[in-house]
Length: 330
Image (cartoon, rainbow, N blue to C red; front, top):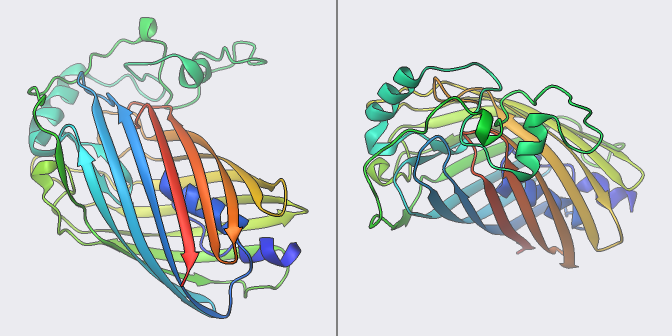
């Protein structure tokens, strides 16, 4: 049991639902051989108005291959993307509400509406996000709002950004491919702690006018730390990302962060809960912030399946995302 969990701490992800699901698959997997090739994929659906008045529905099909040799792991991923509007651009930080081909109009609208500072989100929904923002969750006792979280709709002071109607947009296309290199700073199998340093680059091959990329290179790196306490896994990650600008809208280079806890319920079943986000990416907007949970099931030697749900807590995140992920050793 101990060796299986320690082997799961190798390639801790950036804070996205897809990567959180990938970590859960690793938690549920058996120990890897010294050298291996792995195929993984996930299907994610996200929906939200973000900072706009019009809702965007997105679907991402990620397909990837990874090769591990000793402490080194090299992986490549290619996404297939569907979007109902071009207003969300795919970056190494996930989907970012940039306005796509209308980035200049978005920048102008954000300047006109002003910015109320951290915690002054707009276009709130109820449920978990609203409860956290209002400090009204069970046991909250009127606590201060979560930084960057949406306020309840009645308390919102900022209008959404209106862009041209896209009722007939509905586009499907290939997104920008990514290449990621990870190295284990702590050798595998030594104790119950894992420390991993990762670097990633995204090539600008997708069409930015359709929201499938920014048309520029993205890149960055992250440091991940995880530890085991019995059948419980604790993990955290911090990273820095350099994002390419759109022609009419500059993007800030964000710091990413993620913390979470996983627990093995049985030999084949595990649970994961996480909180993740970025510093501000688009000037005049609240930074991305998400909370999520997932369940993983080990189908057999080197094969796993996971299902996850993430709720957005800021206007830069989708309202909700659901995903199914899978992995198999080749």
